Length: 326
Ligand code: SAM
Image 1 (cartoon, helix red, strand yellow):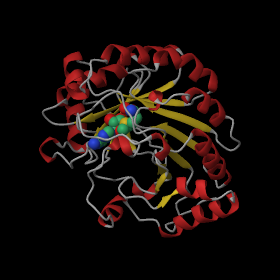
Image 2 (cartoon, rainbow, N blue to C red; image 1 turned 135 degrees about the vertical axis):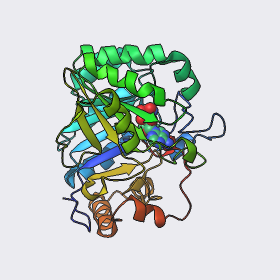
Image 3 (tube, rainbow, N blue to C red; image 1 turned 90 degrees about the vertical axis):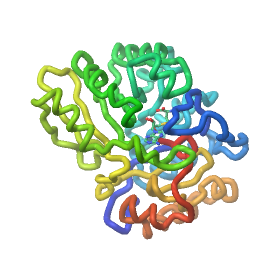
Image 4 (cartoon, protein in one colour; image 1 turned 90 degrees about the horizontal axis):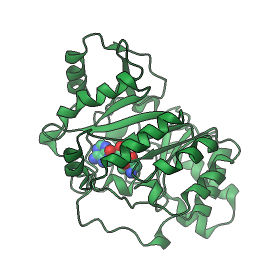
């Protein structure tokens, strides 16, 4: 069992399988200028499976596949088939923009993928095109329909920014009326290739106020212990809504998660700049026992929270979320 120096059990891995993406969301990366990594720098799927097997032996029970856009990596489905079969891995979830996902939904269901987070910042086609620099909203909405049709637990994640898509908050909340989805609004973070856009930042308090004004009967739900979202119900809505204080970092005290970037950098906090390169370990050693020992050591010195992790970085946060895994 991995337990960090603050007594937090580590049970959840977020694994970014690629840095490439088929959208160019303006709050995530510049339109041009991100140089995607050459393939040999990326963990291979075989390396990822070996790593997850070791982590499962250390107590990781849940894996979220993210990126970049996971579905742009070739052979993702074969990888998922092997991943769900790893002993000890109880849940495999995926975060996707849904552009390439619709036709794969039946197989995802058959594989037992527990939950999908679909990123969707607006229901307005023009604004979607503006924000993502691609005209793909119809494909995303078809994926949403397919997920619901196949009864896969679905969360919609929307990054909210003032003057960009704050007018989309209520239409997105509206999805939860007729659909059994969780619509979660995320504070913008500085992971975009240049740093926080302070003028557009909207705090989770502000987002909740907007929802409450339109839905005065908004009621707080009890959140799971390691939940990153504050969740609410609205009477007569099939689904619910939530806010994720990703920049305010209110949830670090119960953080049970780690991240591995496409190049195998282990992050024990989104805001740290990496604590270990697992790819190099995997490539230089066949001794899984020694690698597991190195992994365990990392958690004897984990930052208390995202503020401490950020303060201890070698450089300020500017990297794109696509190179980390959101
Ligand atoms: N391509 C997949 C997707 O779009 O869901 C997975 C990777 S994407 C980086 C994961 C999540 O990170 C998305 O919901 C995205 O909106 C969020 N994200 C990206 N940049 C962000 C930022 N600067 N602040 C907050 N969230 C961000």
